[in-house]
Image 1: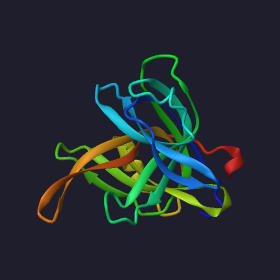
Image 2: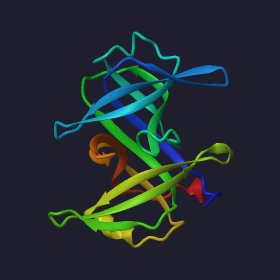
Image 3: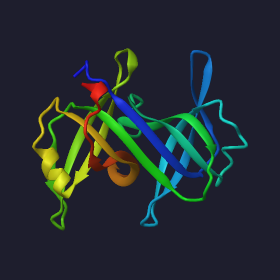
Length: 205
């Protein structure tokens, strides 16, 4: 699995939902996090955290439409607060959007690092939960939770740990309630909704 070449590309278009907040510094470069509100066709919104280096304040004005191209990233939150697995989008480029409409599409290639788990919704629809390891250069990887539905769920449920997948989908946010010290706390989870399975590219073999 470690030798498998990963692929990680995402394009988002939405509205800045807040001002950039400094996150960390790496190799002398300051990185900031800014929420991006990406509308779905259903009318709901995904609010996704964009990590960007030295953001242009004029570009990231709240409610301004922005187009971001980058990669999905994950890291383990060891603070004890919030989700254990944090999912963000590392921006490689950010420009004013040409149209005021949402876009959310990604392509990932990686290997399953956990056995797929198949379940059903209360209405009987089949769902499969996957954890995809997408290799970065220099020996690191991002571990990304994915969810497949219907016939895709049935197919993915038959895969083994280590199976290679190349997929097309969208990054989405989902709120849920968790009981902590007797109180209901609202948390946000991020996951990839799988739309299609794609053939592997020749240079990944």
